[in-house]
Length: 246
Image: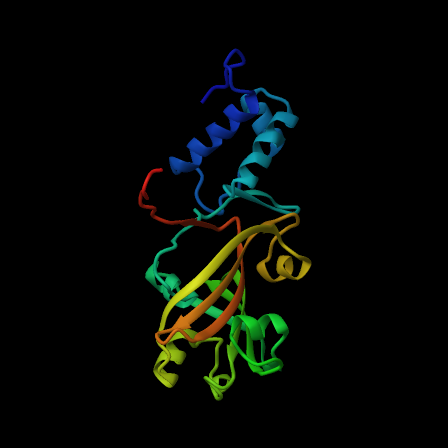
């Protein structure tokens, strides 16, 4: 694709579109190294500043990623996650044909903070299980997830190895807790230093923060979970229906 200096779109936008077209056509595959700034500058007869603007735009869109000292590479296509069914990370990854794994970061019983006690409808300082995990799909870290559960509902929960076990399956199979609904919020944010390290991101990096309160069939809160997902690997989609027009 040639760039046209007389076109209304700036040259960096044209260059960005050209690189996206090359990626979509299969010329550059996932994790394929792109030409250097100098090579792209020579190829398209534009300044390196123009090339840098195009690459920064692609990086912000999650199309490419940089590795210090090694160059710029094509990213995997974003995971298209539908926000319809109440499922866990393991089920989501398996549904896409992937292999899920976890690294347990924290697993112990704590006293509920006022926020936790209010969310889970517990008395102040009641015992709560804290289970923090790094969630991976096909060995790629995708999310940091911390779940809090009332100890009284599942007192032997931490005897399971949650590096491999699915929390939701254990709750249903061992405790008869079928999760039927949840209240969830999503916010965009910048990754904190610990998240950058765990998710193998370079600062500044966009992440998506989830807060979810999950209920059993009798309306009892079972889980309060805080999750941080990589913004460069996920896009979330929901189906909306028209409501009544005023």
